[in-house]
Image 1: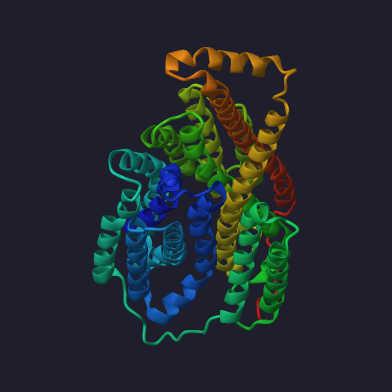
Image 2 (image 1 turned 90 degrees about the vertical axis):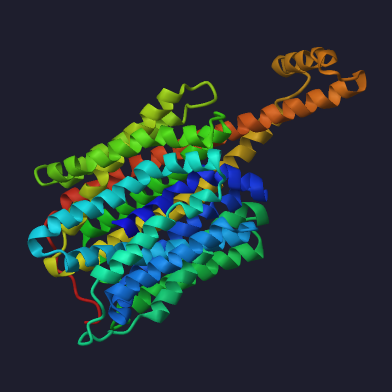
Amino acid sequence: MLGTLSMTLATTIVNVAIPDIMGNFGMTQTKAQWLSTGFLAPMAAFMLVSAWTLQRFGMRWAYIGAVGIFMVAAILGGMSQSDNMIIFSRMLQGAMAGIVQPLAMTVIFTVFPERQRGIGMGIYGIGVILGPAIGPAIGGVLVDWLSWRAVFFMPLPACLLAIVFALFFAPGKDDKSASNGFDWFGFALLCVFIGCLLSAISNGQRIGWDSLEIASLFIVALVSFLGFIIWELVSPRPLLNIRIFGVPGFAAGSAIAFCFGFGLFGSTYLIPIFVQDIQGFTATTAGLLLMPAGIIMAAAFPLAGYMTDRISAPGIIAGGMLLLAVSCWALSWADTSTLPWVIMFWIAVGRLGFGFGLPAISTGSLRTLNISLVSQGSGANSFARQLGGALGVNLLSLGLDVRTTHHARAFTDAQTLNNPIALELLSKIQAMGPSMGLSSDQLIPVSHQFLKQIIEFQAYTRGFQDSFLMLSFVFIFTLMPVVVMYCAKQPAQVIHAGS
């Protein structure tokens, strides 16, 4: 649980520190999103490496090695002197988190006797749920009372304890078990695809969508993606069993998981920045606003699991997605005048939808597969969710930037001599000039600069509103694969990889 808690804390705790990190390094929104995307994308890819590390190094040393490297990355992030260094540390953290989380499940099933595995899973669940619930609040307090650097050091004690416990309780390598080899070529193709796609999306607005560099990145991403699909179909030891996506119910479940990750990690990235930059709250307040929602999401998990055993999983997923769509639609109306408890309420509504959705998505997807394919399906489902999260943060950051620029131009174009509101505002600002110690020569440029700042702030607010509305449409769209899952309930036969 300690290792899992450290990893889940690292996923969310940095989000409340992003405005401070941006200010410290002068980062733009486009680059700042890599603090989250740079964690989620490697995590998605390295989830597929976890099984090989277990076979190659054994449970004890694979776990200790991954947690140890995670600690080094956390220290590197906390001591970073440049934006590139801190992004690199987040990428290294994400890669190790991708290895540790699947390993933690294996540790539980190995260390705990069969009759006590339920207790083990409960302890593991606490780590999974506790991180997102308390992470933003702890991060906010650390940022306000110490520094943004403290959020990187915070998981270190739990990591150190995890290593100590692993030394005593995790089994070593079984000499009788031989490594089956690793699909390095497939892994390389996957990393090239993810890296080029995310880089093209994040830099397109800055460099130009029609530039040779961005076009080349998209082409390389497309070629590597197609190459990955073809290679995984013919490889004797595929990184990912592509054939299971031929089962309609599972393919639909993976699409839902992708959209689920898109919304979960995308909203977790947007909300702390919104409440700090737009509403002017401190990092501590931003974290506290998210804490009740995290607790509600945690409480919904066991209830959702209970309901999934008795009610159709697609029905529960549809209800969760509707809650999420309504929550994001309500947040798309939020601005500086919105009361904190209103923000807290609608965030909680969305997290309730997430709490109901996650267990039902996993159960509904895996029910459509034969028992022999469940382990492969579980890994593929988790991969889809994490990849959706990386793309969600990436695309929502781009959307925020694009829509903010659009609204800034529209507001600027509207400031003419025929606009009575703008003229009245300028006259009020100029009337306050003498009381502010401004000379007559300073009144006009200062008033124009003040008007420009108001326009930029309003455009930024509208950009967030449009981003939340985009999320609402994503969740409504997700109802389509939910219908497909509902129509495909029976397990289907799948040709095994390499056959």
